[in-house]
Length: 98
Figure 1 (cartoon, rainbow, N blue to C red):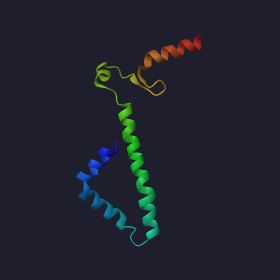
Figure 2 (cartoon, rainbow, N blue to C red):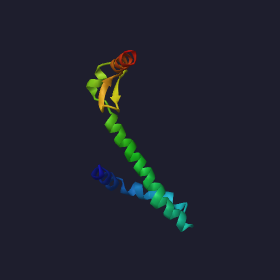
Figure 3 (tube, rainbow, N blue to C red):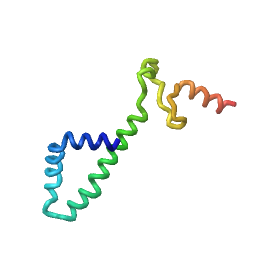
Figure 4 (cartoon, one colour):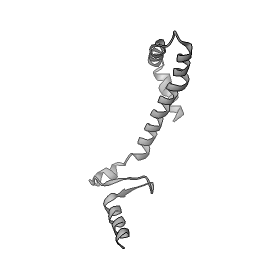
């Protein structure tokens, strides 16, 4: 993952430099605010983006799952597998009833 981030940074270096200069330019008069922005706000945003991206990769369903045609076929966070929610509901109903 880090290697791909590095490749993206190398490929977009001039664009990223322009964005960084623009973003930090607002705080150039106050060094403390600039430091907080660079050391706290930016890393928090980048980590949130990375967690969101990783989460989407983990929860992604394969084409064979989508070919099933069932909107109830989802990723189960408890078991870590793709499950048919209709069958799971039936199982839970059986447990409740008896």
